[in-house]
Length: 130
Image 1 (cartoon, rainbow, N blue to C red):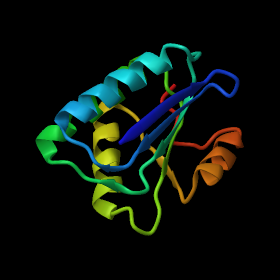
Image 2: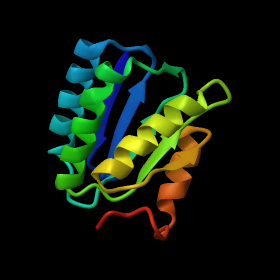
Image 3: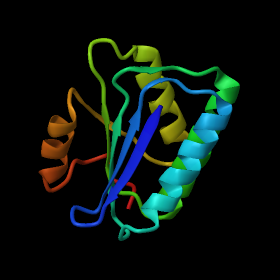
Image 4: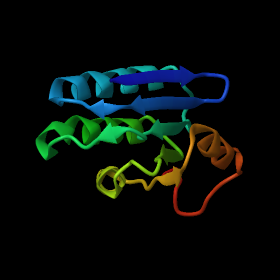
């Protein structure tokens, strides 16, 4: 399951990935994330809630990297991934590896509220891509 929301007021894209998603679900989520980001201004931030997400097979994860690349081209600034105690380090590492491949690095928080607090900080050296 996934949920995607673009908040124009805060200029943030919210992604919530839960459970195990197959390639088709990840393709749909990637397409919806990119489409939602089109409603935001350049320099938008992303809060990516991965708590409860089960890593897909490497082949099924290709849409994630494609979406990350497109979001970089659209002007993403900071990305904060939400992970809880059940979110495997494998998931965090996989998202970070793919994001570094396309030109940015993410931060981690333990809740969506924690991610929002991080984004309210002016800047964090080494994370913004622009």
